[in-house]
Image 1 (spheres, rainbow, N blue to C red):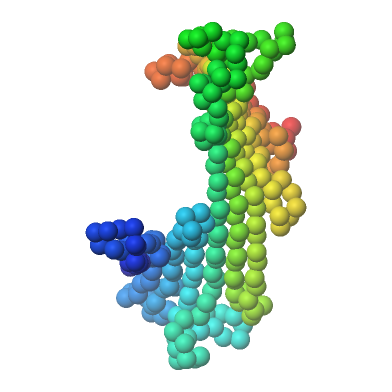
Image 2 (image 1 turned 180 degrees about the vertical axis):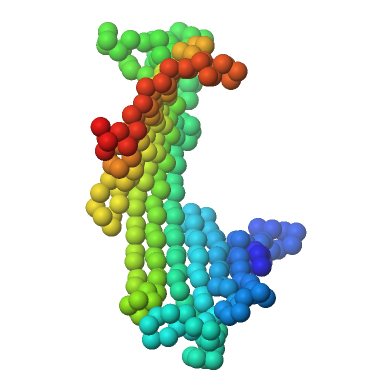
Length: 266
């Protein structure tokens, strides 16, 4: 079974119908089966998942498994329905709630608040009428002129909170675990031909930096250079590739790499 749960609420701004539709649960899925050929434990585990979005900012995902069969004193599943043993339809195995909050801003979003060219001319009386402001990329910081801060860039922040509920058969008890992490990715176009990107984050549970990678790209006209570097961690490695940009000739390339296995097997 798969469906979306929606509702209509009053909307005073809608002068036609007076209502608007909102999504309560998106992609609500329930999955369960019955095996006719099995001699026991015919029913499969019930799996339920769904997601929604709160306040147009927080993404919520849920998934869980429920077993219709009971367990014995050793924690083993037996061919007795949970309803017959404990008077309930299902026995919870595990659940997981994931809350995601993401925010992205870039040079384009900030440019909306920047001063227009007309306003700049008013505060720069040295410009003659009809004269444009010299492009910053043609100015040389080495001789005291302004550096170029108009390059394209974007930064994304991503916060994740995960709450797991897991029933351990061997211990006959339920364990709860909460994991939270903050990740970011940044991309900067240094010049027309140079681009650099980075991904990293912080794991609050283990108090350490999460998976980190640095990507550098250089446009060499008919050629291109790509450099990927993972500076630390289990996947520590680097990969440098220089290749022809034409898709038909991309097998013509020069590669220098060192995988994470090379660090453990020198």
